[in-house]
Image (tube, rainbow, N blue to C red; front, side, top):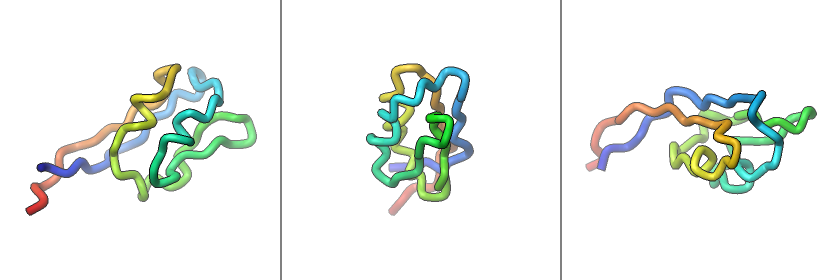
Length: 73
């Protein structure tokens, strides 16, 4: 199965209402809420590209851009 490689975590801060659902679903704690109660990717290098944040965001404010990596033998 090909592993996904992170290109970018795109966050539309205008759409984010700060509910924190994405923060709770992230298994590697990449996301946090900032002082304005908007989500930010504080540790993008830890992202495993599971896209749970993107799938669970009720406001469609997060997009995880990936490229296919090499097969993991």
